[in-house]
Image 1 (cartoon, rainbow over the protein chains, first blue to last red):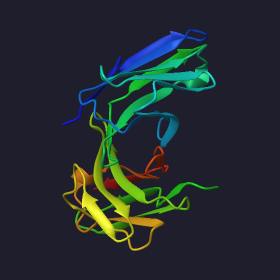
Image 2 (image 1 turned 90 degrees about the vertical axis):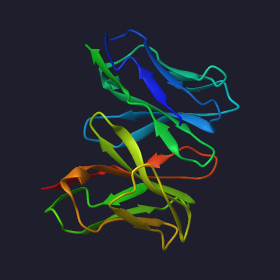
Image 3 (image 1 turned 180 degrees about the horizontal axis):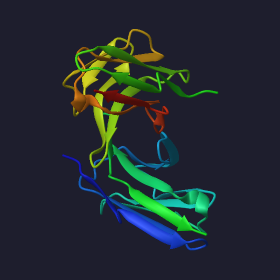
Length: 111
Length: 111
């Protein structure tokens, strides 16, 4: 069974620092990997989608890498802002299209 | 705005009552999913559908039923609600090669 782990579980940084969030998965036979953001009491917002054939995706200050062979993905957020405070979820898609989520990393960016 | 719409947003049920949660998407997506999110448990798949008229069980299907009579709608039913079904329910949809789009969630409390 696929298991997705996110480290650290929580992270607090001062504004302006770069954020590095880690995600690992046990079965490399994934269809794609997606990073989401969830604000308290809200739904999930998709940040980046990396297909299994890709190594990375970028959107603005966000960059996500994927190393399928080692079962790892990293989300980088450059020059963090207080508005980046949220929970970040990593999820892998299996060949049936079912998502397996990690438990998330709770991020606090202090002014 | 295009996306996934869930109704209702909040609901309180008494044990034993029944209800239906509605998910509607206007993106012509084939695949639709129902997840529940609980503290410490993350997001878990309840049921999913790969097309109109088809449904399948996910990780935690007991106590729930679903129907996909129209491509744009995916209904989640609770026949006899139990306190263990207190949770936040999320619906999601996607095309085969795209990432997931999530609704804003339904917060259900069973007393």
